Image (cartoon, rainbow, N blue to C red; front, side):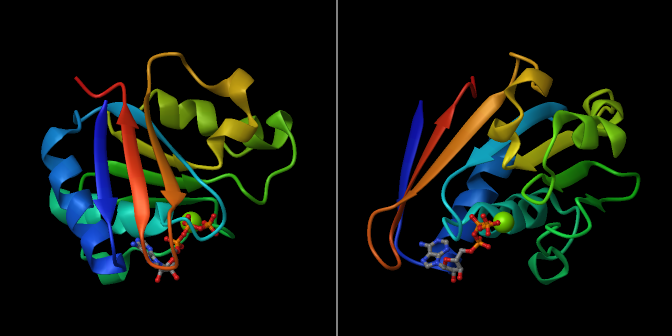
Length: 141
Ligand SMILES: Nc1ncnc2c1ncn2[C@@H]1O[C@H](COP(=O)(O)OP(=O)(O)OP(=O)(O)O)[C@@H](O)[C@H]1O
Ligand SMILES: [Mg+2]
């Protein structure tokens, strides 16, 4: 398990750059943590670190559900917060994304455990202060 401490949004993006070097090109990555923990911030760093887009071009897919980055697409960023049932998650095509040869970064995916393959990487972000966070990464070899 990898563990990081961060004390600012910028530092969290830099941790994203470090993770970008270590993540496989194809994987399911579950990001968990409370509202405002820093999941989207870390995704900005990962996407930027991969060179798939600039951090400023990465925004939360809360309403759009999925954003794509890279040309051809190398990263899908999904936010399941607004979806209420596994049927809705299937309905927007989540399972098709799992079949893509890409990095699939998912926020609020733990709400639908029955849809998640066992083979995945989990990143847990916890606030330890107003601007400090602990980031744990499991399943990254
Ligand atoms: N060390 C830190 N790392 C990341 N974000 C931080 C940190 N300290 C403060 N913040 C603030 O916390 C917020 C993190 O927001 P972000 O959208 O990344 O969270 P999220 O986990 O994706 O939330 P949501 O569940 O609503 O999608 C931002 O307002 C950011 O400025
Ligand atoms: Mg978010």
